[in-house]
Length: 220
Ligand SMILES: [Zn+2]
Ligand SMILES: [Zn+2]
Image: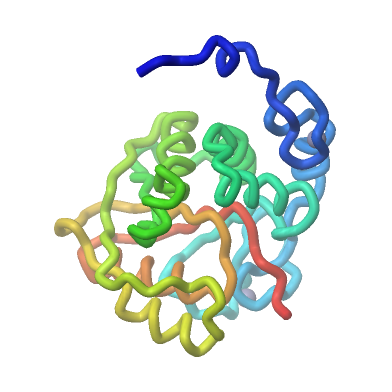
C-alpha cells in the first residue's frame, strides 16, 4: 500500500466549525463538555447528577450515562464520524464518553451494540465498536464482542413502532456470558436498540448491564 506524504502532513479541520488544527477543536470540545445532558435518556425527564436514567423508567439496564443531546457540535462530530469517513473522530467521541462515565469497577467488561453489516461495509469500520474499544483502552477495561445481529433491517427512517419490532428480534449473544457489562452505542433515538441489546446480554447470562451512549436524539 502506498501512503501519500500528503496524508501524513495534512492538517485536520475541526469537523464542527472548520477551524484548522484538530478534528475537534478545543472550543467545540468545550461546548460539548459544558452542555452535559441532565435528562433521562428514556423519558427526557430532568435528572440530577451525571446519571442519565430516572428512577421510574423500567429498562433492562441499571445505569446509563450520556455525553449530550444530538445537536450542534456533538451532532456535527457524530455526522462526520458516521457519514463523512472521519474515522479518527472515534478518539474524540471515546474521550467525551470517558469524561461522562464515572470510574467503573475494574472488572467491568465494555461491549458495543453491533452495527448492521451493510453500514460497516459502507463506512469500512464498525463505528460503535471503535468507540467502545477506545473507551475500554482509556479506562483500562476489558473489551469483548458479545452480541451479533440476527437480522439485516436498518433503523434509519423507520417509525417508532417499526424500530421497536425490528430491535426486538435483532440481537443474539456470540457466547454465554458472565459479569457486568457497559454497553456502548453512539445515538439513542427511541431507546429500543439499547433495551433489546441489554436484554439479550442479560438473557445470555450477564449479571448486570449498564449503558454508555454518546448522544440522545431529542424526542419529536
Ligand atoms: Zn471547532
Ligand atoms: Zn426516565
